[in-house]
Length: 356
Image (cartoon, rainbow, N blue to C red; front, side, top):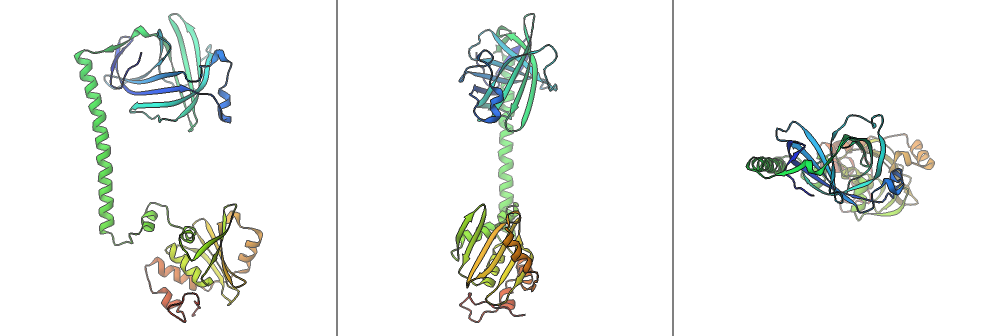
């Protein structure tokens, strides 16, 4: 027996409309966290077994129940409600245990295809069926509990009269209206965002748009994207680059790439032995002149080596020139290089010298 969303059912004498329908498959536990849901065969379904769980609301929308029907059971089903109990009541014994996977969803549901959960079903035999208690441990981090009873399928009846059809149509239209409102809201937000971009005085580059959403462009990404750099090594999450620019020009380029968003800058600008250190976001940048080559190391502070810390500790002085340049970049002042770092040849950026 199978029903569809917005069918009206009579369940033990009361009418309900189906607002969600979820299909589950029994699967074999594989991951470590799933092994707890292995049991002897008599307490488990067979892999591939499936069942449908229907979420039903009464016609007034004030009560919600769940009806679970297994594909190979033509006599019984389970009717339950969400429970605030965290464990099975006294007298209940474990009846079934297993691992379920959502394979289809329809209607207004919080479930998604691919969701997995371990479940345990406890029962207490009683006259005319059994009381049941369910525990579901969803591996996305949520636990759910329900309690109810096993009832004969003959107590579940599909209603096709005019009143039932009117209820079904009303619920279906409510869902369509809700979806339309959601789409309209999304379109409206998109239009407002585009209008904001159109009339905004801010830089409309992809980098600035990313920053608006809290995902700023990093100097590390810039080095990947710019031919002036190439990756020298890549181990344990830290990167060392060789730059074709001199150390000061390299620092200026990286400061430009993050719109001046640096802090704790310190430097030793003795020609031929330059060392420049600054922080941007969660990353530390160490720029050095090593045997005439400009090296840039980028890594998280927690991954700095002992040698890195020695370099940083030796570089205690800041000329404040780079800090001043970063401030000008943040303020949108494009004259920083010309005022603070004039070059001996306007066509050669590899010979940048400081002018205090």
